[in-house]
Amino acid sequence: MSRRLAGVSLAALVVALVCSVRAQRECVDRVRVQAEAPAAASFTWRARCRVTQLTVWRDTAVVWRIEGRLRSPIHYGILPPGARGAAGPREALRPGVAYYLDLEYDDPAAMTGTGISQEFRIAP
Image: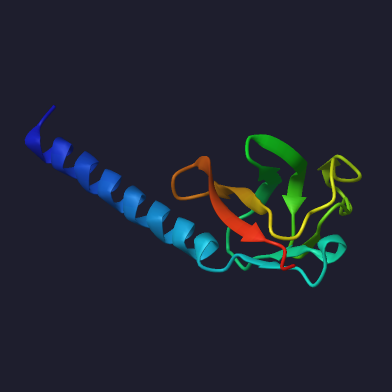
């Protein structure tokens, strides 16, 4: 491989990594969990990427998971149109308990799926 070709390949890799970080930052910066009561939790995000999976878990147990082309907002336990997964959660959210919201999304810059995780609690 010539030095020039190696330099071009390295530059392409750097551009792909920078674009990937930008795409991830757009999803990470705009995730929000709202909950006035355990039964009324909703998850919202603003992003230019496509969210493909939403998972709520506690400790190591999955409480609720849905997949598909997911659009904000998602209401806890309600299967949105076109999504696959459980029609209802395995448990009601309890005040004061630590839960985690995982969003997986397509990262077009990296041509792979990636995700974020955010802790949340329902206020007592």
